[in-house]
Length: 488
Image 1 (cartoon, one colour):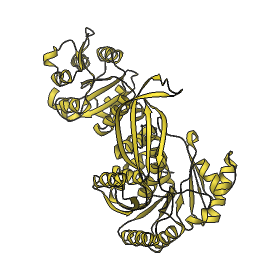
Image 2 (tube, one colour):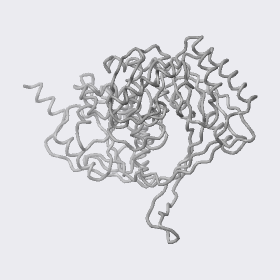
Image 3 (tube, one colour):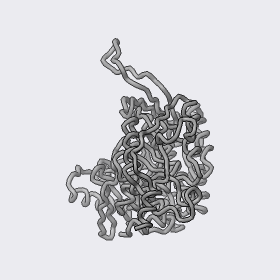
Image 4 (cartoon, one colour):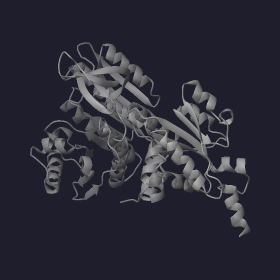
């Protein structure tokens, strides 16, 4: 299997593809709040609602993931003529890389899943939906639009949630059209009949779904392998990628190949939508010409990232690259993130009620003074983000002979410290834009500053945040260290 550094170089190729996605779109609504007491009316928690969000779910989450990877897509689905259908339409319109073909039916209820969440704990899910096939005229229109879109696409995703978009006839006609044009077909399956997906390139069931498709109970690795081959035989399917929760994934091919991919997640917050991420990655990778095993490897890494987020989340190219490089220990320890990734981390931490701290610097040669400042900062917040000047920024500030250590190495050393939760490299001379974006609850600098001279102090204090001036450990300076080294 391809080594991760090589795969990291191929991530950019995913942005050059176009994928046709056909399936059941949903509206995922999240209602967040806190629980401090039990209802006097019944033994149930009372959720004090603090905010609500809505996003695309089901097949809609597949196209969200495709868009996050910078891949363009054509999206064919059904909605109802109702407020939820209009909201879905608006959400898709906000995705510039998605070309939508949403077919309305007056007697259909657009699927809504409402999740009630306290902290990081989901309390309840309430669904509203219609489960029935589309009208014959709608179905014919759906196939026609999908067939027209296929001409400009390099891969197909069939996202089957069993709500009525993907009937046996629709699946058969789309798969046949894709095979005629030699386009790979990736299926997120549903139900107990693998023959519905006859001719697909690969299907991506979880353990339970694989057992349903094979018509048997599965548990041991041997039973999983036998079930996968039975499903491939019945459905004339080329490969099965089965997700196995904490056991990772397993890829089986009709040619007898077998590959096991370990679980990538460090922390699991929410598995909602992880299957959508897997099919999006598989389709993008196959469309970009990657071998099946490498595509599965990418999908496994992406799934590990997305389950570490709360809600139906997506994976960005930068996250994939950092995760793929994790086999190099320094990248694993670096905790490095782009600004976009940092925003997602911060949003998740805030949902859990964490207090976010921020400090910044060049950290060219890490010394005890740096360690003392970071430790002081971390004791005053739950999560500490370090803004790290890029190499170009350090050179402008410190001179052409600096930095001594490249930004990747400086990030790796910082990330190896338990006090540091995230490192964000910035190219400007000051972290002002970084502070404006992250909006930390606590801004930390050394006591050689005053509050008035700390960059961003006025911004942080303006929205109610605090500024802390850490005590300095005497006798420590990167400039002095370099001077002593040069003299020696």
